[in-house]
Length: 113
Length: 405
Ligand SMILES: Cc1cc2nc3c(=O)[nH]c(=O)nc-3n(C[C@H](O)[C@H](O)[C@H](O)COP(=O)(O)OP(=O)(O)OC[C@H]3O[C@@H](n4cnc5c(N)ncnc54)[C@H](O)[C@@H]3O)c2cc1C
Ligand code: SF4
Image 1: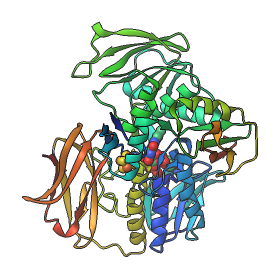
Image 2: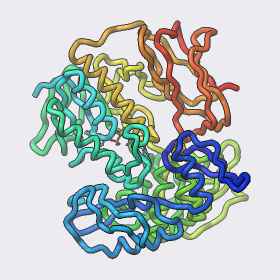
Image 3: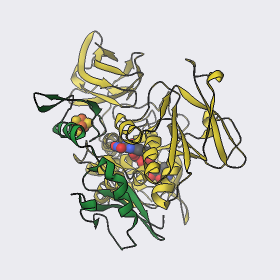
């Protein structure tokens, strides 16, 4: 499989192959690329970023680690159910969203947007 | 009011410039028209920032906050928000605040005011002026800050990063992104955005295609689009129609450098040396207002250069050198900077954008017949800025940058 490493904006072109039962990644410039190549080959994942808009404040959010690609929409639905809470940057809004190992944290806070 | 350095624009480049100028010992005033520091990063809520500078993957707001916290901690830097700079003179900056006009005297100025998006008028989009046509950045603000979708059925013109990012964001929010049209034969966006924002959602991306006409009564109800020939003229026999209620334009950013004095030397970009000083003594420039950076990290790097030397200039510590010119081959669309001070120690970096995509090539820098720097690149794309380090001591006359091998 050929793919592009999305762990950083450099976007190395990766080649992922199964050789003698072992997954081999080439084209990466750093170890993160190898991990990404293997996971994209076996189990693709995506970080979800979104925002929650309340009358006087908007919170921007991210998941602390990547979610299984096909479950991103499900996680988004879960996030949209959150009601207003006073929060600060770095606060965890949902722990282990959709029973994954990812938390949803506040990345930014815009008052009276 | 009097200070050593005034920095205009508090995005990543301006904040980094302010920090570096202060590090030299200069007193700094950082001015921004918005009510918070961070610039465009505040609305770029996606991740993918900071790997180079912070060695960690951050979202736009997190990257902005990191730098802003450093700025607010620095006692040499004063921050002035909600303040718009409308004129600069050699040693004076004119600022409009809620209280009226204020004139700030200073020894050096750093312009880091960012870029603005190209609009429909500038790309000669045919059709009436209709509701539902937005720049991608405006749509980004609408969705991320106000939670409002600009439309339900969307066509995106241009494959710039903002458009790609918005394609994903709006798809996840329930809109249908019907098409992305790119007039060039390749994308101007980052490869990872094509992969993660377009391919992940099976959104059709057509290269060598453009919108021929936007139709509708008051609001957009569809667009005609067609393939283009090698001169980028639409081939009318290929024209097709598609329903949509929204058109997003992601057709590039334009450096907004009108604040610079009239006599400032400009070519394709404002002419600067390796210290990011313009042809007007004491005026420095960095970030997207100089040239478009696809990575905030690169804008930061450039801000640090401008900040360091603007700080030294203000303290009368900047030495003068003979300057050489950086020329480049036709495989390269531009190099930054244009001029280099012939110093004897240390290194500088040449940033460049290629005209085309290349695989497994060398970037070379020649001084006369000597190759003084050479770098192997697995992939060079038009969407991604390349860089190569050069040692000052090896510079012997004008330089020539090429892609070879
Ligand atoms: C949608 C999008 C996605 C991106 N994705 C990535 C990514 O994934 N990874 C990455 O590393 N980079 C990314 N970038 C690039 C990065 O955000 C930019 O390169 C960087 O923000 C440019 O910084 P800057 O400081 O030059 O300008 P800006 O951030 O635009 O800051 C300019 C500031 O100047 C102020 N200003 C302008 N004129 C005046 C005036 N006259 N008076 C006072 N203040 C003024 C503005 O208010 C603004 O705050 C992305 C950019 C965009 C738009
Ligand atoms: S392999 Fe490393 S350097 Fe290359 S894109 Fe992935 S994270 Fe970035």
